[in-house]
Image 1: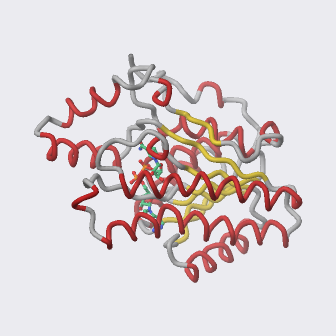
Image 2 (image 1 turned 180 degrees about the vertical axis):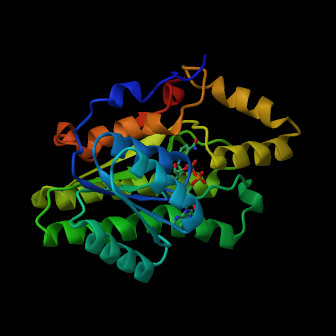
Length: 273
Ligand code: NAD
């Protein structure tokens, strides 16, 4: 089964995020770019936080090509001072932040017995602490600016049904789910919602690298690893990044304002397969 030809058709007259300012972390490529572009199709101006500003500039061009404003800020989500500077710059450029998508993440496929302390710490620094630092800083900004905003955290199906080799990754993504619940509870009084998305297999550079690592470990080819992984998805195909963006837009929009503390699998049925 192939991906829908025009997953953007549904977005042609979408104004749900008109003139809102959305920050997308890790928006240089992959799912983050798909989310940034999908938000722009819904009318948002987008600030991209990423370490890779050169590639992020391509995302900004894609957003501008849709008639919206875009900015790129070099931010390491695992570093509080960097996050502080990034949020200050984003607000100075486009004004109050209405929504943030905590998408920046890393994944290495390593069996637990071979996982070094440094690898474990790096997964938690970027995936778990990075989500915490950005959510904390942006939520504080939303409160100061009197904005009833939305926080969307990108977890993973690996938080609940990990493959072998996803020990550090899956555990760090499970931490994101717990963090999301507490954010929802503590921020509700400020009118801020917090939700998580658990993507299944999405065609991105991260997945390409994961397929190569799994293939090297199992003696299979990357294509064999992919088809084995897809056979666990009820819809037997990978997603395109914007398909995660569709759900992010819902959660960032007024239509999502009564959804909070939720984690939504956007996974072609992987968790039920
Ligand atoms: P990717 O590797 O293609 O892109 C990740 C982006 O995050 C890159 O632009 C990278 O530069 C940026 N980044 C990494 N560390 C950073 C840091 N410290 N500070 C700022 N930016 C940083 O990954 P992807 O596949 O697009 O995944 C995006 C998110 O979705 C990740 O959180 C990932 O765990 C999650 N996810 C992906 C899949 C999938 O199938 N691709 C499935 C489930 C969850």
